Image (tube, rainbow over all chains, first blue to last red; front, top):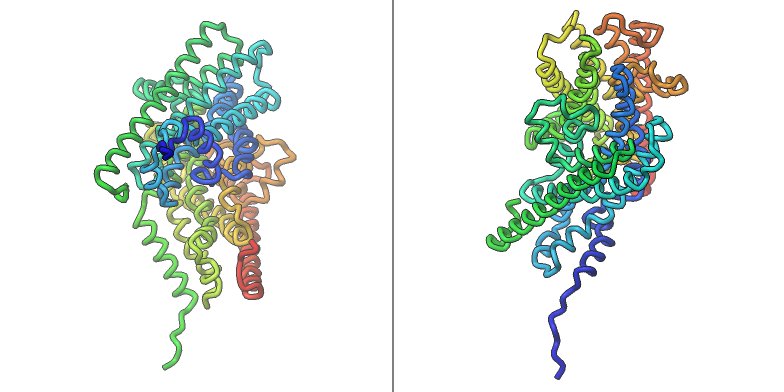
Length: 270
Length: 266
């Protein structure tokens, strides 16, 4: 008599299936038109808006500074705002219960869903940097393509990790839209996208240091300027650390939420 | 017993009341439309620091207008989208009350909510500034601020009408948000934009109204060369054109629905 082993999906399969299906399910709002608009239109208009404001203010070097900062900050749309809404979509579709009783590896499941946003984020920042150099004439050290690429990739991963963390927080909220909106724009104030962090009060500087976007912007600025490898390694380390901490906290939050849901037998209260 | 009839004004007031009650039931929705303007106002204020005392008005006007965009234009534009989302678009369109009165009730409330949002943004930026805001005539400034909201609402009504025919309302509003800020010159004079883009800006009523507001509030302001009164004339004229377009489109929408029987084609 043949024995049947319990069917257990592999880590890779769970990751891949979620990566493929998420854009049609929990990330269903990320239609092609939305993605193309996020990659090609929003960076251009956001950078142009702040460039005009900076040019009116007359700050020397202000335009190049805000253009680069906003080029990187636009990553927030696809990484943070989109990813943190997956929780809402699960609840709205009534699939959260099914997810909680699934034996799938949670890290593979949640990070798999972040794959498409990571790719969108990479494309968004890359296109924005091209806009910055070609349209806004931001100085670009040609030998620093490699540094810039590493900076962009790390920033995209770290920001999606941050989006997953907010998604974890949103489990306890009725809606993630408000949380998403807060962090969609807060980075413009606290990350040094538009002015050096040093002009902010000290508590806000510390708050800014906790955001992966702050270090991502610093790494991209340093990459564009052709900074030495020691500086780049330090900045990449901070970006990676922010990303890893975000993902770790996200997993902890999801686990806590799951345990509470299994204990009470209900997720309706959230 | 005769059939009970309702006047259009009764319907309008009922929709307005429902909009207020819906808002009060979940007022947190004012927050998303305030976060961006408040932060943009603070960022702009920081960028304008050292550029002169009048520049705080650029930050306040720009951020206030962004808030009104969120509440007035976005909300009014979504006035149709919410019916489509809830599946009530066809029943509402086939009700005895013309659909434009239903949308008008929502737009009136969104306009009032936009004013609240604008006031909150004003207060936040003013507190950050830490000095009295240099306003020569606060009452006139307030009246002009209300007028800017009306011009925004006119754009919102046209959006609401157009969105009956498209499912891309959210896309247009989200992706086009910064383009609208730039096009209307909400944080800087439109004359800073390339000359070829000025005709596009002048199609939008808030462009004229904001330029007029700056002429009123900022001494030595260099906006459109024709000055305050022609700005006002342009704002009134384009607002009337927008309202006329919206009325025409709504009329056509109702005819289309009655002819086709549903709106699934769009």
